[in-house]
Image 1 (cartoon, rainbow, N blue to C red):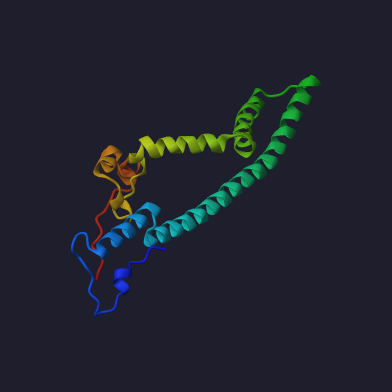
Image 2: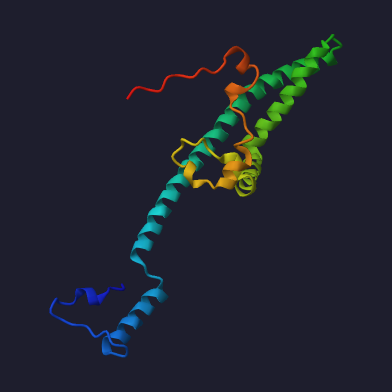
Length: 192
């Protein structure tokens, strides 16, 4: 541990400050050793705290992703079974020569697409593809992530990021048809 021994000297002691003095060389060597070792107590504590926070965030993220995948699998089991029963009924009716309405093809196709998407999320690599897309957004499209100005962390975004898309956007209440049937009204300021 690098300790500044000059601070621990008694009040009546004097230290040599002249260049080349006996204390100046020892202090320089000690400081260099501390810097070489990369030891900075407050920095190490801050890194340890940040690492602990990051680990907790990672665990929370993994729990949320696992719950999302589990919910998707449950949805896939329920609606997949229903779609399978419907599809087998349609195919069986067609095989037996019974008339099947053409509209029955719509749930077969749409249901197949939706279930395929759910299967990809539940068992495929959809989560990884989405994560890679998120990396791209964070890297090259940060302007999409700018919060409203009252958010406590809005100050951490640069003016370039704020100006990328924010100024060109319109509030939902100002768009048609909202503007038509629910025009904005100025409210009086809150009483203090």
